[in-house]
Image (cartoon, rainbow, N blue to C red; front, side, top):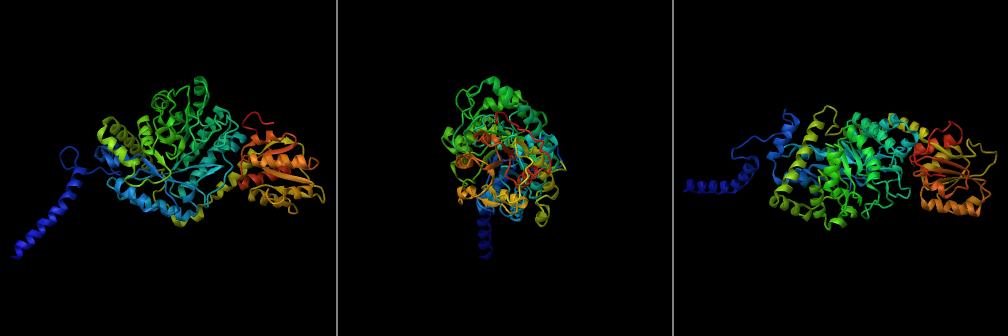
Length: 561
């Protein structure tokens, strides 16, 4: 009786276990025999091992390897971790909202890499961010504020670009971030640009290519992979592709001889990744599709004509420039993969069974050409990871959280960024440079950035200050000299009103970020271009104003009065 009972129990338990064993068996069996799964750390040549792994992967794992997700808040969400543990998500993206506490960020990266190491093939994550230098600094917390690309364009020295890339990379490495969406090689062609501006190295395609290549080499030295963006060029439009799809109406000749030039410089130097932009070029994309969805631009031009062999990564799929063209996010993902992108970036984490996932997984199962395209993308991603993580120069998978406060900000980097800021300072109009304040002179420091006011007070301790919204007209009336921080259209309009109301005052302009706004106030005869709102740039600006050194920077774009 008891034997029969226990036999029945064991048989029932076997029936429960059998489906799970069958699933695991199917996942591990490719051609009929049970095989040992390949492991990411096997001592096999990268191309061969990448092929073995992709052959052993399920459709879920292949598709998930092409995805890069962000998440909301400081700590990683359970949903993100489920994507890693259940589907072997390929990459994660760090945004500003994840980075307030640098130590917690390092802990988060370490946790996510450990989750990835527990998956079937133990494939590490690409951990990406946008740390361009200057204006775009997604990793905040303890990291350095730097002068940025336009300041490097003003200095004109490739060595400055090299060390900007190196020190930014060294700080990212301390946090476990191994892929930087930089350098930006878009040209500052359209001076009305609201999205590129000081992110650019300037107007010259050749200079942008040379400086971007040096930035890439410096980042490589620090162990961080780089990404040239936004292919094939975001600089000749005033529109922001986050909001709508820009159409850049330039000739095919201009497209090849200007926009693609800096990308060719980086491709020739083996840049590991290129980001595609949600941008339409009617001269080369006749159907109105964005470059990110264009097989012609990605396969014929980028891979065929320019010879690019690295990873092609989309800009954020949540941007309206992509979604409005495709109709849905799921369709946008499909079009991006079919066009030739390898990694699909999303600033949010989709739910596990969103159409984002289900529609494209179903397409893999019903469309062999689409499945092979996904498989090819996954193979390229894994091969790139194998070559990088086994190179001996990769960012540690598990950052030392106890060393973060020692490494950030980078002490050597801080000194370099100040020297770069000084080399970038450009005298646009120099009537009162160097400037010597008279005894009893009433000086007003007027600007929206606290760092500007703090740097100014160090050099003019008796000066009054205004944040531009606290009775500035009254303060100007009571002042002899106004040192004004010009940064955008609204501050330009305010300065124009001040000058019109009090033309007898002496004005000195500190232009931070883009210098194009200086053309809107040509009457003021003293103006310095700083290109950045980093504290080091304001420190260098006041030093230049007071004659501590003679500024040698030059404007990296034309048409500034």
